[in-house]
Image 1 (cartoon, rainbow, N blue to C red):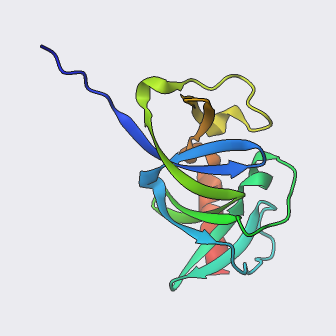
Image 2 (cartoon, rainbow, N blue to C red):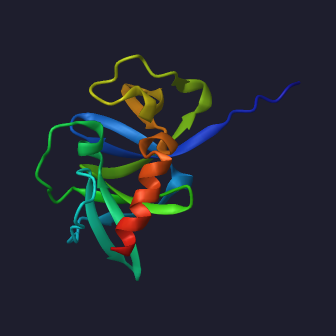
Length: 157
């Protein structure tokens, strides 16, 4: 008798426009309500600024702008997901985040060549969960090494 080993990935589900995205829970430090963001001069457009999160200055990026999705006003459901990329905490502004799901590795398919307006490089795969399609982000590609380095200078501004 063999035992089937199923590897599940636990992901935080969030919304951008009309699509659902997911990031592995091990990257996520916390999910925060929207708060005042201090602008930083000469930062890239998608970098909204910094916040003081429990004594730590954390750069905040707007994923809509990063992915080239039209801007939207922030609402009560807007959240900042604090993720760790290369040991660097970064806040990502999303339209809403309120779900955690388990995704079987076998349910993850490679990304199609075109997924809305989001650059395929940012996408790890697409998961089908019942009637839902979930776009799994590759956080290591959402910010380049240079951009992560630039965020360090934003923190110190």
